[in-house]
Image (cartoon, rainbow, N blue to C red):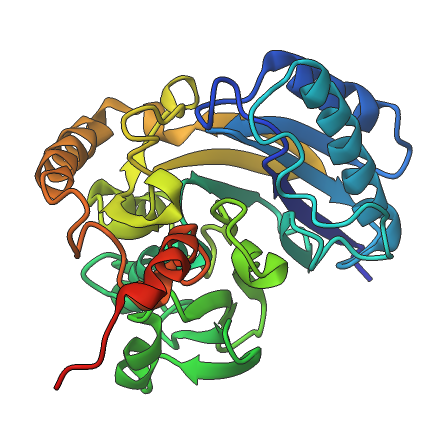
Length: 364
C-alpha cells in the first residue's frame, strides 16, 4: 500500500515591516532555523506574501496533527518575540491565545492541509493572498474546476469529464454542504457568489473521490470578536492527470477580480497577481495581492518553487488591476469601495458609531 503524504500550509501575520507591507528577513531566517531543527518534517519551505509568514510543510503525521501544529505555533511565537524586539507593527496580531491547546485552528493562524498518496508525478500550486479574506478563492476555484471556458479539460479530458464535488462552508453559521458539478452548478453559484459568507473549503474528484484542492477558511475577526487584521488566506491545488493542468489552474488570475479587504480590511479592490519580489502591498496598503508558487513533490520533498506570476504574461492583469484600483479608489469612503455596513461589523467603524449613537433622534 502506498504511503500517504500530508501537505500543510500554515500562515500568520506576526509583525509587519514597515506597517503592513512586508515581513522582515530576520523573521524568515528564524522560521527557517526552527523548522530545519525539527525531525517531524519530510521537507519545508518558508516564504511570505505581504506581511504574512507562510510555512509550507510536508510530513507523515496526517491532518490536524498536534505535533505539526505545535511546531508551527512555536515558530510563530518565536518570530513574534523577535518582531517585538524590532518593534514591528502589529507584532503577534494573528495569535489569539497565549498557550497552544492541541490544534492551531481557531487560534488565529490560517491552515490549509491535505493528505494523499503521491502520484507518479505530483505537481501542486500553492496560492497565498494578502489583504483579503477566505472567500477570495471562490471565483478562481469555480473557474478551475467548473468552468469549461477556463478549463478545457472539463470538455476534452475523459479523466475530468465527470466533474468535481465542491465542499462549501457557511462561515457565519458554521455549517457545510457539498455540491456536485456540473449538475448542481447553479445551486453552487447561489452560495459562492456571497464570498463574505460562504467559502469553498475543498474540491474533490467526483469519480475517484481524490482531493483536488483545499483552502484556509478561518475568519480571524469572527474568532477574535473584533477587528485584528484580514485573514489573508492560502490555497493548495493539485494539477494534471485527472485534475486541471497547471495553466488552467493559473488562468483565473489573468483577470484581477474584486475581493474584500485592502485598507483596514474595509474596502473592495482588485486581486493583483504578483511575483515574490513584488508582493509587498503599499498603495493604500494594497491592492490585495496573490502569489502562486509551484512545486513538484518527490517522496514528500518540495522540488521548487517556481514563481508563476513572475511570468510577463500577467503584466496585463497587473496593468488592469492598477486601472481598477485608480477607479475604485476615487470612490473614497463610499460603497461599493468601502464595504457594506454588515461587512464592517468587525472593523473599527462600530467604535465610531457607538460614539455617535446618542446624536440620533426619532423622525416625526
